[in-house]
Image (cartoon, rainbow, N blue to C red; front, side, top):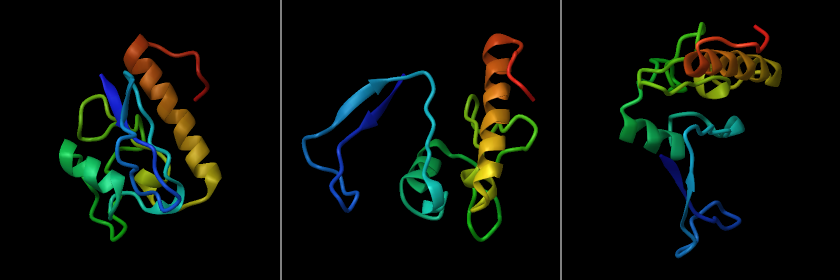
Length: 114
């Protein structure tokens, strides 16, 4: 139903009293090279939601490469969080493919490119 957020300082630490909610049906976590599930916010989220993590040392979120679905219904993962640190072109490609898969799941079909 939404995402709980807060402002952070220059060291990415939460600022007390800055919490707010954003209503959302869909959320993307774009974390760059911060590392997917070994530590930090994605690790906490993975634990809370019981998202399957792969067996690689980098502890990526487990999702297939056909439709990017994870072990959690209506949760998709693509790019670095799924495959680990890689070239940005791979993340862009997977992001586009995931967007098409999500569009198909929501709408029954998609006009987005493959």
